Amino acid sequence: MATAIYPGSFDPITNGHLDVAARAARLFDRVILAVARNSSKSGLFELDQRVGLIQQAIADLPGVEVSQFEGLLVNYARSIGAGTVIRGLRAVSDFEYEFQMALMNRQLAPGVETIFLMPRQEYTYLSSRLVKEVAGLGGAIEDFVPVAVADALRRRFPQSDVAGVSSAGDAG
Image (tube, rainbow, N blue to C red):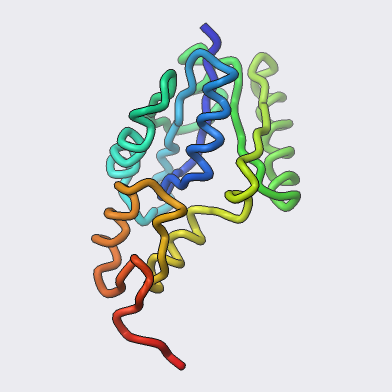
């Protein structure tokens, strides 16, 4: 059984992430969205919340599951028998960092390959950081994230109407 890991913080998971996961699921028997535990970084959502939101989002994606890990990704990959790491590339600006990471991972674990997948064109600008910013400022996010994530963001930013109208009104 060919297993691939799609790692990330997924804080929160976006439709772009899900598009890459669906593409990977067509190539591999098993795709694991591996949520990185990083105690030195604080995210918008706690690790368990992110895992729960991802579980809801991937419920209809056969062969896709979620787990969490800490430490070196390649060590985790080897521990579960995954031979491939999936990374999403949205733009050329992503490539340099991802390329360096892939080369480092290859050095650390020569048997673990990295495959880059591009999301559909309508998701190339999408990032968790932008979604959080738009949600925090009261912008509409329903086209960017699964329903459960949009609901979680509404609860997280109650001062704004995440459906698109700021509770403070227009600044002019």
